[in-house]
Image (cartoon, rainbow, N blue to C red; front, side, top):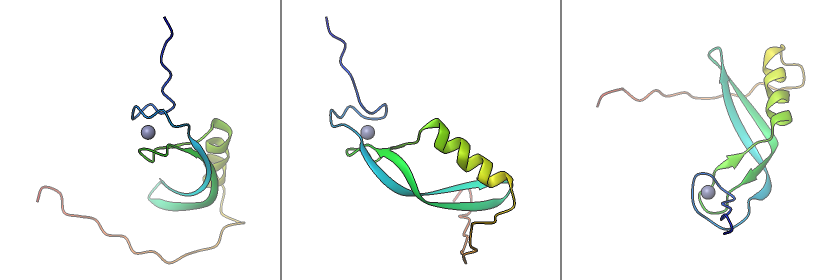
Length: 84
Ligand SMILES: [Zn+2]
């Protein structure tokens, strides 16, 4: 009996993930970080993104240090009221 392989752990698509460069936003200590051109594998069915360990480690390191390579962008943040 062969075990069926699901390429995506969030849906039951049989389509393989696609290699893409995506924009990823992360928040650390109340500060938002926007990473562009992040290599990811994207599920063509549900859109879930998978990042590999070394990539995430690198982003974590970039968020520890004061940004040198980054450039500031203007952003608007809205919080929706809870419980409405
Ligand atoms: Zn999926």
